[in-house]
Length: 423
Ligand code: NI
Image 1: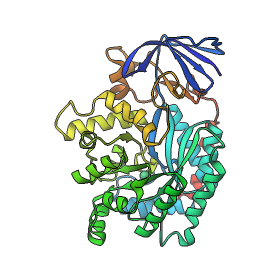
Image 2 (image 1 turned 180 degrees about the vertical axis):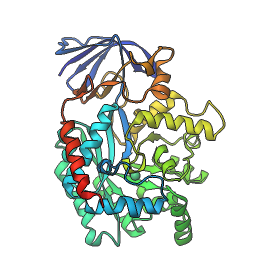
Image 3 (image 1 turned 45 degrees about the vertical axis):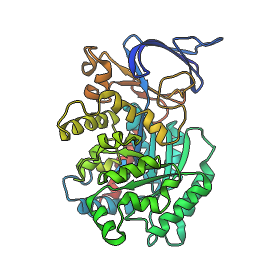
């Protein structure tokens, strides 16, 4: 659909001013310049609107939306073994599909247009992505060697990739070895070799907790970053989640190998893992992007909440208010995520870029007055201001009404399924 957004505030080149935007099919073809021969099929009055690039949630597990609020305020191992695992073990592919749909509904409502997902049930998240119209990068979580006898999960991952690749422009894939403590060294090296052969990126959890670091040091004499490097994970485009417990030389290594880091401040705090050295990683030249992690460890998938936490915790822990400004937080939630996921021409409002946009209603208390709309996005917005969400030029939500998915049915299905899944 060709869309004209007239006289709206829009975030262009790091500044918010009034702009006219023109969208033809899936592309932004004009910023303040009507493309030759443009015929609008829909006009959006931008008077009380602020248009931003759609937010990119660079690390989550969408199926885990089913596990929201299931295990809180408890030690990590109890959270995992008494809260998460018993339900996860009973979940079917169909349950995972409804979990993914719930996650997608929540993300669209908060202006997220792309998510990077590590999932456990093949075909179900991809089905939810295709039906909803979201943009996503999918990786099947790979754990081995002892859990993945005969490399069944690797085969599943490759099967899903060959089935899904090229079928939908909004869907791409990576390989997802879960973490150094769940993927043994030879297994991890095998996955890295396949990624290299097939031209795929790697999505992995690294250096999330002190226990992970202590065990690797004891068993291998390596940091988590050195371990992943030695296994070949950095020979391909790599996006590493968490990176909380890392050293200066880890940072130098990641910068040299062009590894992107996705920081997940809420998850790291909730699970008592501490604070990733984000300002230090930025200084080292690492591409840092932002993610929510799964709903069992957050417990929302709201990138506005995450942007606010990101800047506030680092100001607090570094004892300075000039640490990670609003523009940097927005870049981490948009263009840096696109770069980390290898998605070109995404994450900015520019001619020739993908029409993935969130449009906020600025006539709402958290956005008033207009002293600094850029600040309001990071420090006072909560996501409920998002009125319209557009992915690939398709309107997925307008007037806060979801257009491609049936929210009532999702709520019914998830609640009914959790009655069965709850211990
Ligand atoms: Ni995770």
